[in-house]
Length: 567
Ligand code: ASP
Image (cartoon, rainbow, N blue to C red; front, side):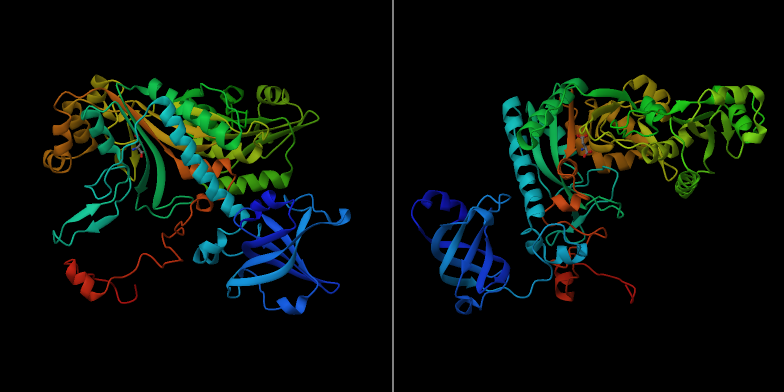
């Protein structure tokens, strides 16, 4: 029986075959105690014949029979559900022994993550990890409830596919039957979910695995899980409304958190101006301020040059006096991120200090003195260039308001393309509809996309867009992206053809479920909410995947591997 079944026998004195792991063995005054821990509870077991049971060790899986006794008042542990009783041991049957553990099965251990991942099945025995994995299960269940309630159909899509571009490299799978040809694992089900809309399905959702062979970036996994949605006749408002309803249901049912909808909305440009980022953390209410006016006739040469070149001076007026070492640390942090340095003034009892104080003009002194007992922090330059540094400063100098825990915001009006390593890349994916096709065709580099992101507490939870449903526009977007006619035909000809038989308008979204759960359970990393994650370098220490193939296997797949000796 499980420990929780004790509730049904509490009146009878005997409990039989209670199964669990031996946890925390203690000897005390001729008595032997241990905690019996099963899948969801713990109960204390005690015997006054320690010698009869001296074979038991931590994490042995055992079956216990004995008398149920009430603990003396002073021995009651009110933190534990079964802290008022204990089992007086009669017989103990060892079902399975345990080797010496690589780490203790308890919360808050400080063990190298590599070792935890190598023994993930032991790691998940620990309460904090088990609860994370169960939060995952509850999240899936709640998503399905919300989808059923709204009336969205769960449909699956293949995972052996032809490449879908989402801005990363594909994982590829060789095919034994087609030597020299490869499937790709989906970076997302994007094209399939659109095909459903062209197939006459009204809507779609899937809790989908996505695979992206990215360079290791903090808190990314090569394999992750999305709630993927597509809606026929959908537009951004319809999709956002569905996502808001889903989040509301999920947070309430799994985490007992009430949130207000509709979520706030901000354009990409405004977000950069106010927060320096397209992932603003609204738990910090302070925004970037334009301080250019203070310096409009300045003699400070770098500021003068900035203003002459149509740049601006932006920053924060902090209503407290930072210490010199706080300023120096901030200066160091932003220099590491490419800033030339921190601009600052302090006004202490109407006295200005700071490296530029001596060259201030009278009117600047007057303006700055308005902020008595404050620290003025700034960056001068083009606003697109100073944005990311000001975002960093904002997150360094202000502490998020923890009482307002869940601050969602929609960010929209993204530029269609962005430059990545000198190349034009869609800021979402190339199936996103331009906001205005004429403008897009005239000036694609400055065009806006019908693309929207959902951000929670400074973390991008997901992205979506209205899709292109016209084969000509699709072709034109792919060609503005830089693909030649034959590349378009070869990679996307089949998809453009599918768009050519009367295709409804459609829009959709995908939420990163791992990231969402990590936010909700306050995990340090998404790896803590994924049962069997990979390390930052994409390896699985438990199974040692990925692994090399034998020469024989390689031959069967018509593959030849050419590695440097020392690789
Ligand atoms: N497929 C997109 C992604 O994975 C989401 C979407 O546009 O629906 O980011």
